[in-house]
Length: 391
Ligand code: CMC
Image 1 (cartoon, rainbow, N blue to C red):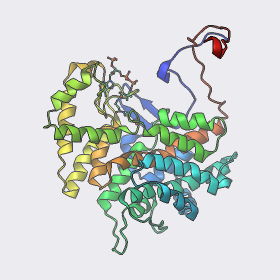
Image 2: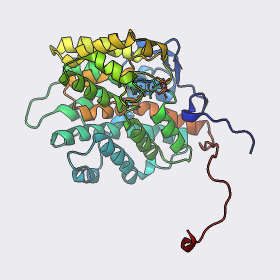
Image 3: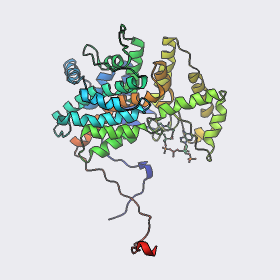
Image 4: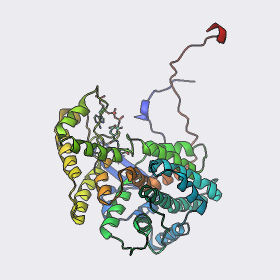
């Protein structure tokens, strides 16, 4: 079978050719379809970014309207799906609920399951973009014990999501531009990140020609883990723990350095970025701006900044090139927007959805072969079966 190269964690294995996202870890650069993330985050909006990732170019006015219209066509979820939501306990982790509901969508939208042409893929994409925002909002309402809200086609994608989350029964509803703007920016920053763990999962599952919704459901499970998207929840829990423990950040930096201790500085380090994470730079500033605009003082932000300072002066972190990543400051913004900690990774998933779909579509259109890594076997050599009575 030839020589097999062992690459644990695929640290240096290119698994595909891709035109979507460029990432230069040494120089802290991230481009969506060639556009630097700094420009996109400042000038674009999430709907446009979804189009850019899916179709490869920024849309013209007509293309944009058609795309938005395509999503609005599916701005609802089948009533039966609500019954599934109802049987989950309120204590259920929203990521588990989200992954189950996304998989369940296949049952109620059979047309989107077996898509092969580009046109069918684009329609399935618009369907999922629409319905997934409902499912994310549902997990939020469930956590808070509130009934769900329907979609509103007078609003854009992010506004619609905002309203489905935050509209209270029998109360006047107003969009808060600061909150909507913050959400939009966070979603843009999470929209794609080439072959990360969840995206690779989506591609791997999809490479067996599994349908889009089921492939994305698998990606949600991968994202849930604390070493990946789940880090945003873990960061806030860590900052709260440090605060309750008297705020001694140096103690936790020492703890993270101790190899006999499982504790890691959550929100620090990245497989590819070995200089800084450009998303973290944008988010840190946004966190500061948003807290100021909303008039919120959050001790967690002070602790995060102290932690960053102490860690970045420490030889351990410097020599290993460990910097704050996208998850380090994002939770502080989500918290300021009134989003419960367990919901943070759902927000990441909503942002990452267009990336997952674009990568799935690219994989299918490029006709990538089924993903099937090899191994280096190190188990027992051939031996003869021993009868139970003789063992
Ligand atoms: N705290 C303390 N030490 C760390 C940390 C950390 N957060 N991250 C890496 N290290 C050490 C690690 O122990 C190893 O040390 P040594 O060379 O002495 O054995 C060295 O740095 C290299 O780390 P690694 O684990 O081999 O690196 P990796 O590329 O396999 O893992 C990572 C990358 C992101 C999983 C890891 O840095 C980590 O666990 N960070 C904390 C979790 C986190 O913030 N994840 C979010 C990642 S960014 C967004 C996303 O993917 O969703």
